[in-house]
Amino acid sequence: MDADQLAVAVPGLKRVARPARLAGGLAGLWRGDAVDVAGQHFEPTFFVAGGQLRRVEYAAVTTAADDHGTAAFAALLDWGRRAWGRERLVRDVGSLQASEIASWTVADDLDVYLQRAQTPREASVRLVYKLRQLKDGSEL
Image (cartoon, rainbow, N blue to C red; front, side, top):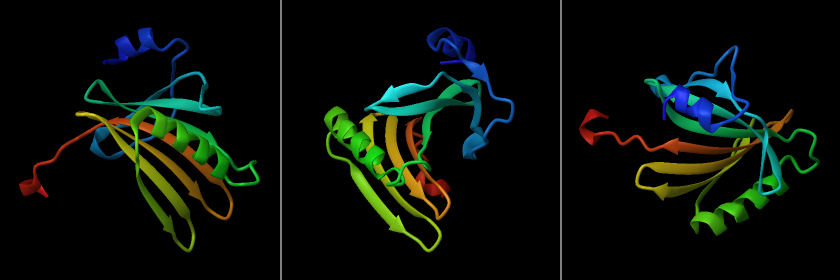
């Protein structure tokens, strides 16, 4: 899907003044109106590379929540299990940040992951849909 098709598919799409840049030439060029997923409020950002949509990231900042996003993560994890089955789950507790990541392979070319990250100052929950990018092992 290119930018013109995205604008037709997503009403209220707005260009981002300072796009986030990720590896592989991804740029978060567009933001959509907030949506609810599994009872959680998210703002979507649409990432483009090579003129094509490659990633959609739904972000909810949960700093105001007393549980630092734990309940939101649990609700979304249940939602993901109902939609795609059992997840791969990784938990990492570091000295400055703790995170949980649940991931699913949704289709041959699409991955979805859910992330909760917490620092002493803030917490966030993200739901990300991204096209799978396979790499040739000989190029690593």
